[in-house]
Image (cartoon, rainbow, N blue to C red; front, side, top):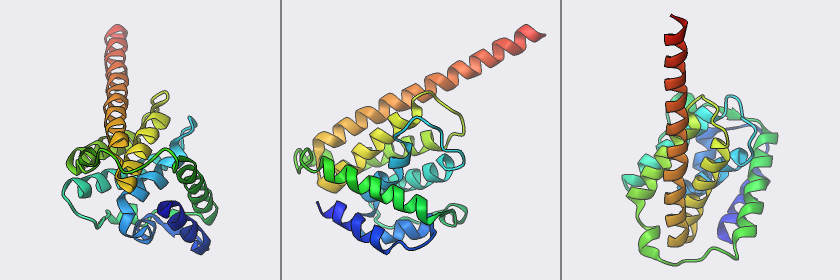
Length: 198
């Protein structure tokens, strides 16, 4: 798979801490799809990653905006672009992403190309998922579900796979609904507690 080979080369040349802005530039012409895959990987497990969700969410939401607008470049806010990842973290993320892409190679293929090229819809979904990451509130199973949907959309872009695009869009809608419902429960519960304390 070209994407897996690209990640392998990138991993071999990553010899120190890397800023998020530099990582986005290094990913090359398949940048938006690869970025969605690479930055989703750390969140596939249920343990919250303190301090990482917000900058990663902003990067992915920005990528979604660029995709929806039909742009390939990814300008990032300075405070996000400067956020550095240690060499060890970069190595683990890239190695895990490479393994995932290699394992999924047999299941992904160009199909239903019209769905795979609904870039406005996919970009909008990436914005929602990025915002799910960025909200600094723990939602049970929120990160793994969000990451799985973002990973699916990234693979759809890389492989021109419309089936994955549709699954990713459904996943984005479902996980965003979960986040909204949880935040609504927190809001109404908090108001009820304040009202009861008066």
